[in-house]
Image 1 (spheres, helix red, strand yellow):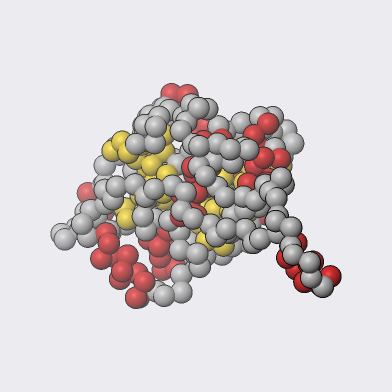
Image 2 (cartoon, helix red, strand yellow):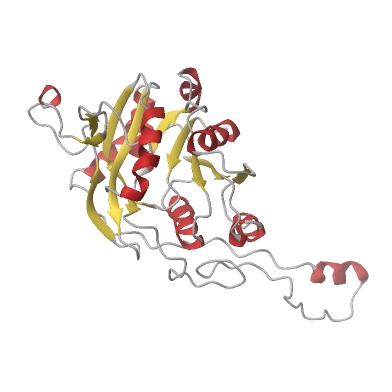
Length: 311
């Protein structure tokens, strides 16, 4: 995932994310992120600004006249029907994980039944509705409800109409708490993320790009590593998505620097090799791409968070 249009952003995020902590790649939690921003006409079925058949009662819905009855009964009949239950919006992607991963997730559930929950933070500026909604729904659809404490949407100065009231109306229909933080001007990634972290109240923070698709069982491995040690800063493998949200293998795993201090992918170092290593064993990394990772909230602020003076 080497997108020249995002290189500057990733370098800024990387410089702000080089924590004095243990950084781990965790393979069972697979994320994919588009190799190019999806076009605004991506194939969501849009009706009244809401994507993909989200069932929201319209203000123009009619209610059949109730038969003559006592005033109390008539009032009861006139109440609008309850909103339909939320249904999965994003079909689960094909499971490309190593064969050992599902058994490892089952082991996590039996060994650590009380994992920390997380606040998922998306930062965006004029993100297309299709990719933002896809990202939000993939998190909701594939995260155990007891682990998803809330979603924080940090709007870093967007002026696109679909990110104003239509977004507020849409998130109000979702089955998890969603908070929108308006920066009211373009403040940059570092300040936007810190604003989201300050709003969050979950045990951990999970920072995601606003154009991703979560794989199945993505959350448990990340939360498990933090459950093992609160100073673990955990990042998933980041593969790719095509413009129409199809899986594209290969992307960001371990990250290091060359002699010009430019970040680049590296192999697992010999120091960390051992006999019997499998795909579920964490891989220490000297740095991270900065885009997608989980960290305990208190520890994030203990080590200084992101540098808000970075422009």
